[in-house]
Amino acid sequence: MLSGTGENDLPQLVFEKHFIRKANKLIKNSPAIDEKLSEVLKLLQNDPFSTVLKTHSLAGRHQNKYTCSLTYSLRIVFRLYDDIVHLLDIGSHDEVY
Image (cartoon, rainbow, N blue to C red; front, side, top):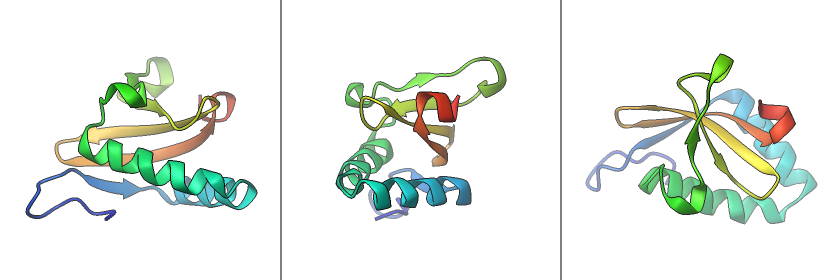
């Protein structure tokens, strides 16, 4: 599920250790986030620019990075390479920017 290579040619999701630590902490504090995160990761893998995700590029020190919405208050920061969605950070607006 986390690797999208193969027959359907979906992009591969690559997780930074920092992303995994923060995601696990969020899930521990709010178990309902787990299901929502799974849904968003599937959407990211299928179409990183799905309107549901509200994906947009970042500027300044975050140039060449993108962000999408996990919930109203939580964001996911990532980079896009040819067939890779590289997940960098997850957290509130103030935590990730």
